[in-house]
Image (cartoon, rainbow, N blue to C red; front, side, top):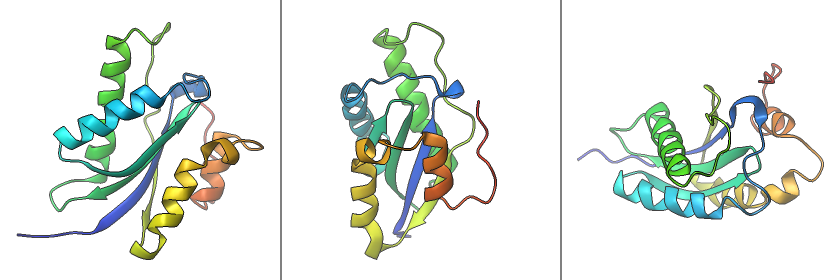
Length: 143
């Protein structure tokens, strides 16, 4: 049996950067995603959200692609939010997402970063956070 230890920090946002979660209100969604991930054989190390985006640390299995895992989590979030009537207007995620591999030695640092979203966004936007964290050399599109 093939075994892998590939950890990835993935981030995706709400299309148009609309605010969906007020501070702390995404907790029920996060709990649902953690439960759904177990059922779908997705190993989440941690997941957290801010008002317009979600961060997660996921361990990829040999048969999983990053895109498939992110799309599965995004799809599950959409279905759950629609079932709970949590959105007034049409809700969807941006098409793109951002991801970076995380070494075993940096797992705790990535977890700490993901859990500190309130502090991370005290003085910078999601766009600025993504550009800085993922060391992007190009401007992140505003949608």
